[in-house]
Amino acid sequence: MLSAKLLLAAVVAAAVLGTAFAATSLGSPAQAQKEEKLVQGHALESYTTTGDVLDPEHQDTRANPAEIDPDRYLREFNYGRTSTLPDGTTMREFTIIADDKQTLEVSPGVFYNAWTFNGTIPGPTIRATEGDLVRINFINNGSKPHTMHFHSIHEAQMDGVFEVIAPGGQFTYEFRAEPYGLFLYHCHVQPIEEHIAHGLYGVYIIDPKEGRPDADEMVMLMNGYDTDFDTENNFYTVNGIPFYYMHHPIQIEKDRLVRVYLVNILEFDPINNFHLHGNVYNVYRTGTGLTVDESTDMITMSQGERSILEFSYKYPGTYMFHAHKTEFAEKGWVGTFLVKE
Image (cartoon, rainbow, N blue to C red; front, side, top):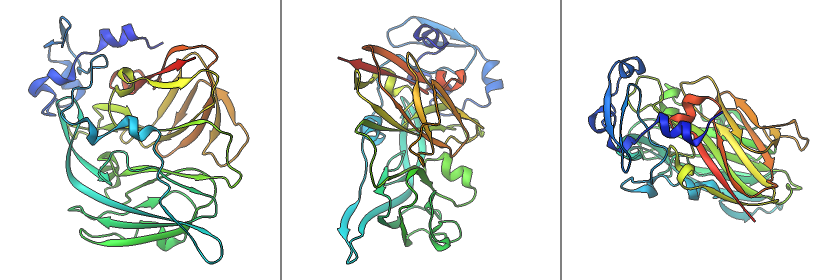
């Protein structure tokens, strides 16, 4: 069972690791465990550790926290520019720009060559209703070839696999939004693990025509960062910044239905999962049905899997949510809900 005490005892400030970590030169976990380090915490005493040192407790001290904004991303849905076709179909038009030249501070003092859709990790959440015509004006502003591959039903030439877009190139993806459910998109240029690990991914939601019950809706995308390029993640997050929702709790209302669109895009690890404290949630796997698949407090997914989770809290207070893979939680994939009257 994960606790704040365990987290505090296990980890300390990543921002003050200096060249041992901020320069992303830690090497393999085995090498890290052989070296003892004395690390000075912000307002805490010094700790001696033999492992990777991270910080779940302190305030967000990144130089420019707006570069990746988990608060904004959580509840922001991009419905595109809408118009009505002569046959009455709603068309939703989006412009998505790929870039691979940005450097983002993914944790205090840790800088990473981020590959982005529209300048953010994750990319914008694209949302439509079943039957809409979706048009994506894709521009490759990067230095490498890129594409957009959407999980859903569409024609072969819209699949974003063989039609590789060179630097400076453009392409228009156009397809019907079908079926309803929770999907994702990502770059599909080889080596695919490189393009995904660097950040080229986002969530794609297709709502059923009849809609879903009113709820406090939010997106949680589970990802990670391999900042020393050894195909092992140094950080794990939900929505882009390690430990963000520990010191920025997600506020929700007691007794109100919460709907989480949960997507796993984690590279280099075979599974990821989501555990909710003090509650259980109804699971709609892939969101392609309106019947509950199970009620649980922990769901495990492989890369690319997703589920819609629905729940409400009976009692006010602060409740944790996190990966029930302890390594992931202690390296950033942990947060809290603040349930208010």
